[in-house]
Amino acid sequence: MAESFYLIMKKMNIYYLVGLVIILIGTYVAYIGSSRDSEKTIQDLKDSLNLKNQELQQKQVSLEKKQDENNVLSEKILQFQEKLDSNTDAIGKATDEISKISIKTNQISNIIKNEQRQKGAVEFETNDYEYYFVDLGMVAGMQKKSDLQREETNFINGIPFTMFIKKDKFLVSLNMKDKDGNLIFAINRGKWAINKNEIFSVNYDLNGIEVIDKRGDVILQIDLIENRFRVIGTFFESDGVTLIHPQLLAKVLYSEKNYKIRLKEFQMNIKRKFVHYGEDYLGKRLKN
Image (tube, rainbow, N blue to C red):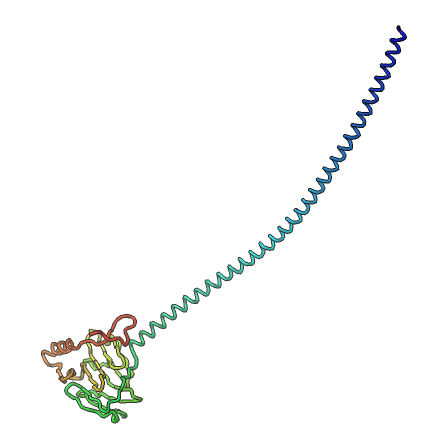
């Protein structure tokens, strides 16, 4: 019985050992498998890390290229900004120059306008008439056009008034003075000039000229209408003033008591024919 128990225990020990060996072998095999899986996993991780590292390196290279491109672009922007600033300065200088030129132009324009107001030239248009009727108030007469190819002088009392045709242009010459004998308006073969201290304005076109003094009175009108040449005005002399109007030629002495009244009445009856105000009034007539 004891021997059988012994044998049973011995067999059980053998089975135990065999089972233990199997377990150990299984454990080892599992360990080996697990170790291989771990190695594979580690290798996979390493490969993945290497791949990621390569990608990171490529991205780093790409970023470095981008950075270089950005640096180049920044440099170009700075250069462009410098050029822009330079151009802005140049534009500013050009604007200043343009402004100066504009000011100079305006000054020159004003000078020209002032000169146009103080001197000029008037040439009356002639036509195909053989004779011209010259009206100097009550002193009037016919003049042959061919005779006017040379200067023809008439007198307004003691004041010479000369007419002359040159290249089909009717030119006149006349000097006008004030009461004190100062020259206030002169026209010589169509070229006229004023004493700006006495004369306010002169306006004219191809058919006439009009002169206004500082008091606003019309002191001279000359018109060429078809073949009729007419003079209206006040002509001061040493002892009095000669008044000329169609059908009127009179002299009023300064010594007469009603001298100023007669002079004023005469001047009030002369209607203006031209515009004498505004920027571009030269050559413009009033609409009557």
